[in-house]
Image: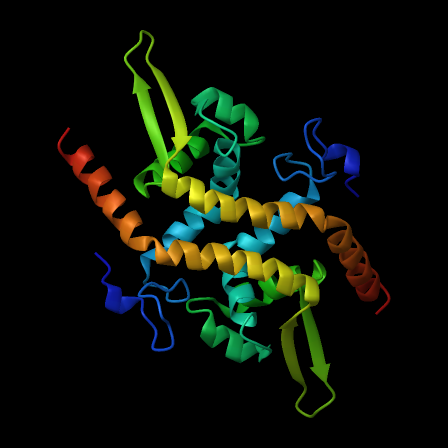
Length: 134
Length: 134
């Protein structure tokens, strides 16, 4: 297991530091912000869903990638998997309290980016025409 | 170019929507939250840096990946590249005002995750021992 010593930087108040490559916080950040992780958390922010419902919401995800994403988020304690004792078995996924707190910060970032896309697209046009005119 | 119509969902207030796979906001979110994008923005949150200084701060990044990351962030209008007319040429990178606003939300997420890693690691242990005892 990675120890706290491998993460902490002298100037850092917290014992975990994503800038250090050995720190497990880097892996968790990637589970949260990776393409499918971010979209899965965002979908679960709306409520509890079954696997196939989630798959429809996260446009473009494959069954395999959604399954891997959910396992990683469940292992990190961000998503709770609830298997109902029905026949056929029904499995629901929902955010844990920790997952909800993380997702609130993630959604703040996502909504900010969505809200500034006009500026981003204008910057892209300026960048591309500056390159084309060289 | 992707039009606004390809992004917007009926229930969505904003014209851009990362949950839609054709929306350019999904690409920008990935530039911001991808492994190297997030760490590069986090490093630039501390100030302006030259390429090699940045490379040392973003532990583990290759020259090629840092270069690609900076180009994507510059094209999206989040990072400003300033070439000084010196010999040898000196190039500094810094956040734009938009990049700074995005990075503040990203850092809020990163610091929150770092601060809850004890809970994440405890969840991983519970998950792994539950699987091992099956």
